[in-house]
Amino acid sequence: MSLLHANTSLKPAYVDLHIHSTASDGTLSPKEIIKTADKVGLRAIAIADHDTIEGSVEALEHQDSSSVEIVPAIEISASFDYGAMHILGYLIHLEDVSFRQTVRVVQEARANRNLQIVKRLQDLGFDISYDEISEASGGGQVGRPHFAQVLVQKGVVQSIDEAFIKFLRKGRPAYVERYQLLPAEAMQTILRAGGVPVLAHPFTLNAKTEGDLDRIVAGLKQAGLKGLEAYYPAHGPVRTAQYERLAHRHGLLVTGGSDFHGAVKPEIHIGFGRGDLRIPYRLVEELKQSALSSKYSD
Ligand code: AMP
Ligand code: FE
Ligand code: FE
Ligand code: ZN
Image (cartoon, rainbow, N blue to C red; front, side, top):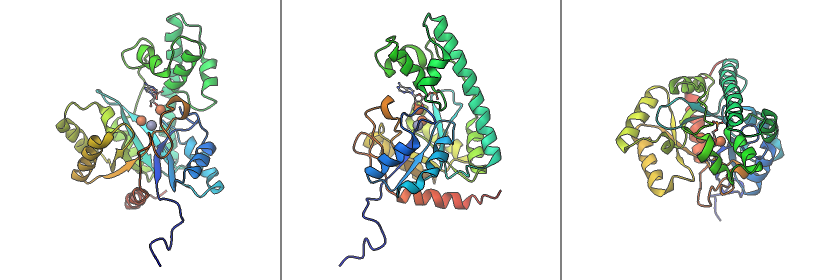
């Protein structure tokens, strides 16, 4: 007789803490995401949409339709000169008024940027309208992947990737900067709403050396960072081990997720990334511990 599984379900205790829905640039709705997570046997998920909590809000409304636990989340882009800095916020109190206000400011900046991208593409000679982009987004928040989708549909490019390489990424003709929170502002916004700020996919910072990354992480920790996303499809075993050591050195927790986006990144699957991702439920418990220590009060 074994007591090992006495108080657990038969599900393996894996989670996915980085999923995008139709509320931002993913192609599955929160409801469809929960259904898929349930089917593949995940115990918990976080819908961490870019600059919006609507994916998490909707997921919580459907929580009872399965046994998958929903961890409220967001992914905020912060300003950073070298590469892309994305700060994940977990276990935020979604009803927090000042959090919602800050998010709204960021969303307005994004909306303005989107109009300017349309203008750039029109100036480049493409017959493209904002309505078409909005339609591609399915009513959720518009992001560059939706521009990419429309450029593919129109035959301007062959793939989403090509759209970014030729037009949409930094330095290309349809790239437009947008206002972003400073890293410290993004982290404090999350902390004040009772959440846990975690640095997403650290390699996108484009730090030149391990020493540079170490210094950036030390600065972020001073400004409120609580964790690093160590488990991620693009990391591979070497980077994963490097990030585990980095987190340990700075007293940060680790998290992980697939960064599932649906059809715009078809090689990535919910929960398991390219197939080899395994994120234990224990990390959710550590996030909860961290959130408790921040003593949220409304
Ligand atoms: P935005 O937040 O609207 O500026 O769009 C940025 C998002 O575009 C990123 O978070 C990714 O989800 C997506 N993205 C960036 N580069 C690529 C790429 N080469 N292929 C597909 N998606 C991309
Ligand atoms: Fe995205
Ligand atoms: Fe990201
Ligand atoms: Zn993401």
